[in-house]
Each structure stands twice: as structure tokens, then as C-alpha cells.
Length: 299
Length: 207
Image (cartoon, rainbow over all chains, first blue to last red):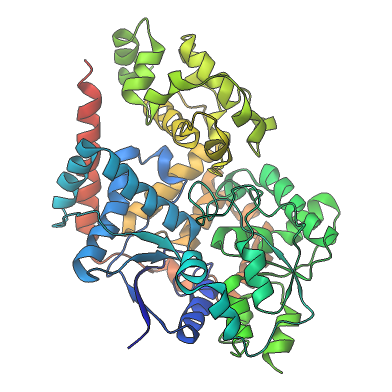
């Protein structure tokens, strides 16, 4: 039996053929190594992220997340919910808290859930996978399992917005969270501790609707990584990863820059450091190859 | 002018603040704003807001209904929560901005062709079809939002990116035909319809 077991909410982008399928795959690999069993919430739905609000108002949005929690409580009894996507985690945790604070809203959500034959108890903790790594397992134990230290790689830890605010990791500051740098260090890589854009917004969903405004911010995020002499950027957030990696060509065209810096997930770093192959770490999912990680993986 | 908007003007003729408190998500927090301006200074897209959050709060209190609800300011919110964690009085500013945007759209007052309002609607409709977002169709709907010609042009402009995403297995052509979805989509749709009915009824309670 696995040492730890959680109810897993992967989210829309972490599905086969979706934009963070590389996060999904590397999380699977990482969890094998860390002896974590993830039990997917059966028939989970989209949380509507932070952009559904224009058409989906408060109660419909809270109800979407309530359905996922109710399904988890019914099928994955007594298991904490773990999300790997920042927006999924935020929406789910926010819904759980709002429905705890507001009894009448809780009753209303349950009235709507009854239409789908479900009932929400709302006593399940909602965690981000980063909390599992940092709090449940702890960096000492992570360090102890490293087989191939990521020596010689300088990494800018880009925490982003929603993994960090408004909830974040207990004991960390919103302005300068250190856990990603500490994780990078415990894997044997070199963390850029003065990476000043670590919690800068990438535009989120506005990268689609307001590309000019968002790409100006992404440019700053990448520029600061170069200024800190980083070989690559690492992040826990699927939207941060996509926004910062895939628009580098467009940014180069727009601003005359020559960016070509890999953007990877913490789960890929752990997978490689634990001795897994480039393919298990989903490094083939990069648009900009993380050459230095590939080299260590193939050693 | 939409009927809902007319009804709301009649009902709250003298107090836009009461209207916001009653009908906007987390609107009861608006009066707690102490006008320090930390939110406005913390917003990553701050320079693009015609009226930054602090100003929006004061405008609500000053009864500037049209100016607030027709503004595209709230649509600049990226949901980064920087303002929320820095606000000395812990106002849920992100939610209030979302709530104002939702309310403005419901009343038919949101600026026409506001790109984020349109994208948000495309996103919601996409998600409600199968209970999960279909990223391929989401991208295509966005490219084709201004018609067929513009859509083809936009698709060609993004062709290389699309090819790279497919090669990395982060986009799948098969998603165009069906794709991922929730099995009990009927249940999800009924549930959301019910939630919407309950919320709409609650809004009318203030009649």
C-alpha cells in the first residue's frame, strides 16, 4: 500500500492531449517515486477557473466546485483533495471556505447539487500538491531520495500568483515565498534567490484576451530570469508554465528580444532528480527543450 | 436599455451603494474601503485601469452608477490576488471586481466587444457543453470571434504555435470531435440551471 493517499483533482488542462499533459505525466512519475497514490475524483468537472465569472455568477461557480468536493466525499471517503493546478485548487478551496462561512449559501449549493443527485458535507481539506511536498513530506525527506542531483543547473523559481495568493503555503510570505527555491536547492540545483519576478502575474487568462498587455508582463518575468543568469524557469502552475513558455516567439517578435529559455514544472525537476528518464519526466512536452535536465536524465 | 437595468435603477434610485451591497458578489465590503490606494498600486495591470479599484470603491459610494458599470476597468482584473493579500482591511477585492463585471454584464451595461468579457463568455459556454473545457475549441472560438476572415488570419498567425503544441502532445486534433467531458453532463447542466435560478430569485428579494 502506498504511504500516502489523496483524492486527486487534475483539472481540464491536465488531461491527455491538453496543454499541461506534461504536468500530469510528471506528477504521476513524481508520485510513484514518493509513494503517493492519487485517486482521481470520478467524473470531476471544470471549476470555471478565474475567468468563468462573466457568465457564471457566484452561486453557479461555487456549485461547480461543490460538485467536485461532494463527489470526492462520496467516492474517495476521508481522503484530502489534492489539486495540481493553481486555479483548480484556488476555486475548490475558495468554494469550500465560502460555503463554510455562509450557511444559507451552503444550503443553496446543496439544493442545486440535489439536481445532480449529490450532497455536500464540506468537511474535506483541499490541498495543493506543493503543500503535500513541502508540508506532508518535507524537504528533508525529498532531499534524502535524490539519486541524480541537478548539479550545475541554475533555476529561477517562478511561484506565480494563485499558488501563492490568497492561500499559499503555511508560514511563507506572499511577497517572497522561499519554498520553491528551497525545493530547487534540496534537489541539488542552484536557486536564483534574488529572482525578483517570482510572484509577478503572467496575465493568467488575460494572456488570451489581452495578449499585448499580458506579454509585456511575461517579458519582464523572462528578462529577470536572464538577469539572474538562470538556465531555466521552474513553476508549480500550469497556466504560468504555458504563458511563459509558449509565447516567447511572439514576445521576441513584438519586443525584438531573443528569448529562448525553458520553463519546467517542479514535478519534472523531482522526477529527473529521482533518476527517472526524460520521457517519464515528460521533458518531451517542452516547446523549448530543457537540455540541461535532459542531459542529467540520460546520464 | 435592458429591462433588468431599468428595474434596478427604479429600485435603487438613490443608492448605488445599496444596490451593490445587495446584488454584487461581496458587495457588502465596499463601504469598508479606507481609500489607501494599496490595491491600485499593487495591480499588475494598474496602468490600464481607467478607474483603479480604490477609485471604483469611492465612485460606488458617490453613486456614479453608469460610470462604474459601463467602465472596462473591472475587466482588467487578472485574478492575481495581489490586492487581496495586501489590503489592510482585507477586502476581497478580486471578487468584488469580478462581481461588478458580472453584474454589469447581466444588466447589459458592460462595454461592447470588451475582449475579456467576450473571452469569459466563450470560456463559460465551452465548459458548460461538456462539463470540462475543450482547449482546442476554446482557442478556435477565440480566433474566430470576429468572423470567418479574421479567424482564418488569426489561425494562420498562430499556426506554428499550434503545430508545436501538437508535436509536444499538448494539443490534440481529436478534441475537435467530441473530446474530454463529464459523463453526467445532464446532471451538471441541471445543477447549474438550478443554482442560477436560486441566485436570480435571491436578487429579486430586494424588490
